[in-house]
Image (cartoon, rainbow, N blue to C red; front, top):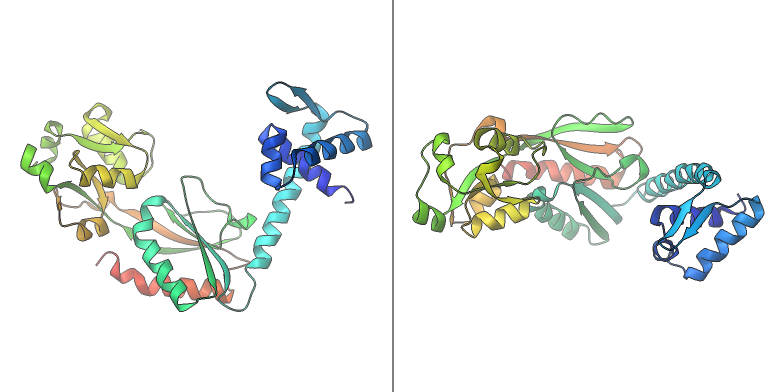
Length: 292
């Protein structure tokens, strides 16, 4: 593939929609991007993009080419991720991904693991989107909810991720303490802004209280925790948060249906590597401390 650089440039232009966006992604000058596009169009004898004031839009011919480029780029990314993970020692990059609310339990474990292996670079990726292990985006993923079923992944049951319905002492002194679910209607509730959020405890709050009763809404578990700590109202925090912060008090007993199942997910090609196995073993030894 003599002109892969040009095809890859065209693919990034299509993704970004602009020359400057593609140049930033590729780490090249915008003039290089334009030169690659012009050379590729000249070689193929067709226009791959329509130029307009807002940027570049792929033509029909461009869309055909870029579909192939997308698959090829993903395969290269996958290959690089696997090659990087095949080292025999515990060094280089270790990429771990989870939802942001798990950072309170994962970050201390990652820090301790790195201390035991000074040659290791930790990359801890959080977010709502699912990072693709088959494309080399991560070595280990902690997933919540139903059992993941992606092909070529090794999936292991890990633990229940427990939460508690809590409020700060400042809030309870000011407003009073609920004694039942029915009392929640008289309180300011802190919850997720998205009605379709799949976390069991979020679904429970929306079903019990209704969206209109949730007067303080967030899209991030860390923001929810800070709102509860600040005395804004009653909301869900992790069981670890409840233990760490003396100003928090549990307002209703924990319910089994609030817990989320956690799964350890690795790609079959990297599962048996020294680095991944060392981290999995370390993580499993620490799990007993989390929900004790």
